[in-house]
Image (tube, rainbow, N blue to C red; front, side):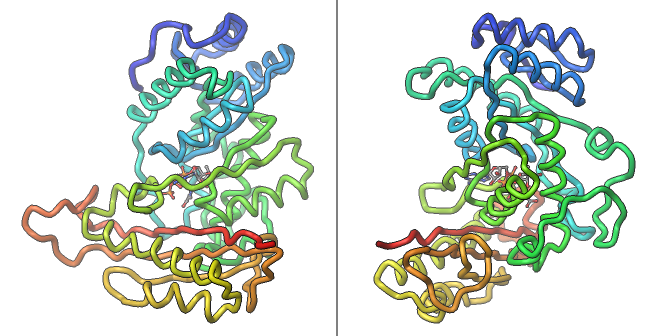
Length: 359
Ligand SMILES: Nc1ncnc2c1ncn2[C@@H]1O[C@H](COP(=O)(O)OP(=O)(O)OP(=O)(O)O)[C@@H](O)[C@H]1O
Ligand SMILES: CC(C)(CO)[C@@H](O)C(=O)[O-]
Ligand code: BAL
């Protein structure tokens, strides 16, 4: 575990004393710190109850760790609207298919803790512009806590208690990752039940996830508001993603194609084109050079149903999204920066742009 700041200086006395109370009930967490790490649900629930009694509000940011500026932007948004922010760090096994990258998914606990502590300092320093909220709790459960009765299954027909949102979860990413959104919806329902947040924060980068979570919240009457925060990008446009560490220079350069293809399609729409052919041909013109990647899909879909569109209704707009599979490097060049895993880890990149309604 990382170093922890040895003072409660980022907190009001109310929050500090609530944390101290909750901490006393939990042997599994270290203190003092600018936030508390919880490994199990009961202690987190105790803190949550105390926050409710003190009229405090909780914004919840679920993550799988390997934190970057994209995650931090969700937390900053949560700080504007809530007094307390809960962040979960859990690499959820059930959303990875049996042949996917669960074992190589980046895990960077120490640097995650440092980033979150620095962010709490920043939030305290810039309280006027960023709002009153601070990170109060990190929920980092074990798989046994999240899946208490049966081992988590990634098999399509595996047993377990699952939340399924169909047909949304069968489209786009679901076409290539059949158990993905069953795993996402299931773990989010569990996380929402454990944290009972006033608001939850998701990134637009995973746009299908935002549509599915909104549907789940509506259909199951989950008492929370879903907020979607815009995609954070590198200066050249590449969407930040935890998996980018595996790209290396060469595949990163190829990865930029994904954004350029989306921008070309967006420009076609902005210049008045609405037919599927006109909009997607603009993207394909850029993306259809097979190199070290394979285009999984380029989609033009309805923002609510995710059904593919033949023509965009300009009053409604559309979701333009794509996924690329980056193959491992065949061979590295002398001195080449190949990324974590020496360029041998295949990387799936996704990105999207929302084509906004036009008056
Ligand atoms: N570039 C980004 N901008 C805004 N939000 C983001 C960005 N990247 C991830 N998020 C959001 O952060 C939350 C946690 O995502 P996650 O931990 O899977 O990170 P990730 O970077 O998406 O990783 P992955 O490599 O698995 O795609 C999700 O709501 C996700 O949409
Ligand atoms: C929402 C989430 C944390 C569920 O595991 C994950 O899908 C992610 O990080 O986007
Ligand atoms: N943010 C997406 C998580 C995943 O690809 O599993």
